[in-house]
Amino acid sequence: MIGLVAVLKAKPGMEEKVAQAAVKMAEMVRKKEKECLLYDPFVAAEDPTVIYILEKYTGAGALDEHRKMPHYLEFREAIEDAVTGPPRVTLLNVLG
Image (cartoon, rainbow, N blue to C red; front, side):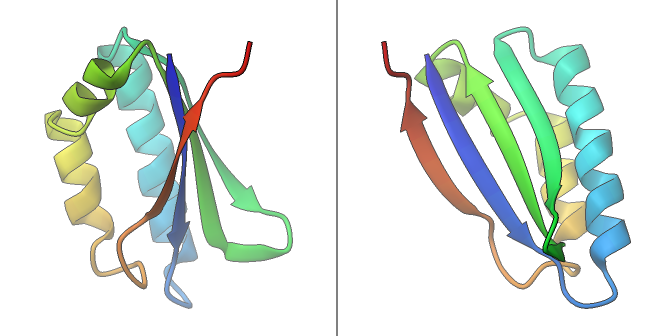
């Protein structure tokens, strides 16, 4: 099992666009990626320009497949002009 946290920073005034795209992406992942066990977007309580996405996959192969999915590529394209840069991603290993 593998997890990750992706952090997106929306440009000022683009928070709603990034948030809506993240929610749509989560819906597509849940619908189409059976090896994704968790995919939940959150907005930082102290800063509405910061979106966190918590993800959990059955393994590294499932994460690799996620990054090739059409909805993932569409999501990245949809937010490209609305974020300050690429997402900051931290890979996580399950304890226990």
